[in-house]
Image (cartoon, rainbow, N blue to C red; front, side, top):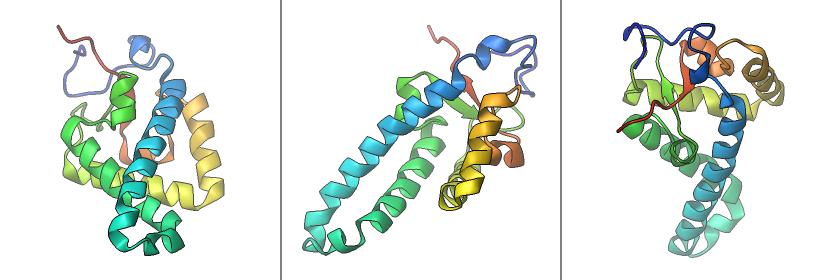
Length: 149
């Protein structure tokens, strides 16, 4: 996949791995939000509709579980799979449960504190590896998935 399987693709020599990643991440986020909202809506009747009183909190919990599970299983959420991107840790490996959990936790902290989300977006648009704030802390990257035949 890469010239050195133990490292991340070089943004200068292998720029195709990072091409259009911020746009794809945004589109994937929109798809994932719809999926999370649908899952949350399906849960509401099972709570005798009391979940309507705390629906935003339900969205956060369902979103946390959804992101952690999907990142653990394929290193990408369903939205990311649709747009052919995936996460890699600092060694170039797919996310395991620990990486998926920490990345999801960092993402939730970022969306909870508005200035952090702005910093994350700016970093995705300007850094050579298109990394968000959580990615910078973890050393992870979102890359275009290599073609599989």
